[in-house]
Length: 454
Image 1 (spheres, rainbow, N blue to C red):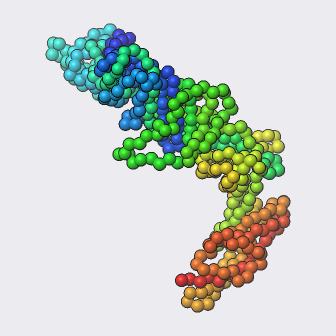
Image 2: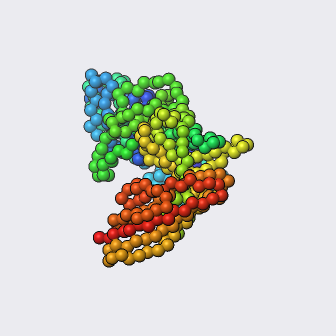
Image 3: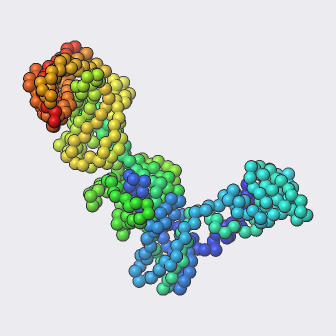
């Protein structure tokens, strides 16, 4: 535990180099553990060579990615050297760096001990007093510790220290950018199914997880949807092309403003936002939308499989109520009961969905609809040709009619010789049937396939 006396000594050592706090800040977050920070700060320079500390940077900064320029291009400041200091002040580190140096200790009982610190471990301070005696002091009984000065290399916040050369003296705005890890974002969607299960009320949220070691106060916030290529760790890369020269303040809005950007989509929050360190912040992505949907039951016709899977399909188009780029994320689907309580029906994850593409969500497995596939017979025609008779039965135990899509995987060169229900060839290895099954009824597909092996 440190009293004010020790803290004053520490702070007096830190202000020996001028430190600069942020005036304006912009943050661009990617969904690949990457953030790009851009700050405008008023810095004070001396003409000629000098030193300055750029404090309060992200603890997980990539110091090799730092960019620096003056807002006024007539003012020239050249960075000659850069050091990133992240060995932050803590009692453990001060004790550790003060081994073999003199400290002064006052215990809770008012006892004063002064001497050379020999060891700091297991909750004990071992000091050698001026009379040569060795004294062991239990750390939890210590009330005051005085250090003559702060050991070299300890600071209170992660800081970039620059050696610079300037053509002027005075205060001016500098633009500094850098990359940091420890920050990520993903989309979260919540959909509420209508009573007739024909439409879906969809809302989207941007969820940002900040573990970068810095709080971004009143920042212009952007998120990028898309998969950017990252250089290997030993290579250096810059992503400052996504940082704008100006940082205007826009009017407040419900959610993010989206626009295409290069081969990605850029979402900008049109109001300042504070993103605290070790915080997960959720911000509305877009106005709630109502989309027309289709529920689909599908059964994979393979021996041993019984489950009928439930899907929700919709087209991401304006015609059905959507028509916006949907970043990758988790989708939760609910439906309100008669008392308006929300029941979770299922959840799924989507990849990036462009406009006018289909969205297909896996919801769960149907309780009252089951399938059964039987290989009835197999006949060898030649060494490379054989025929198989299959029977696929789907039973509907619901009190209402259902439509079930049945698919079957086929390998090799195949030809369906006969079938009791018309099929559709979906690909070189899959066929589909569509069954309309009445309440408390069943439907059967009997077919024969000839398969030729190479």
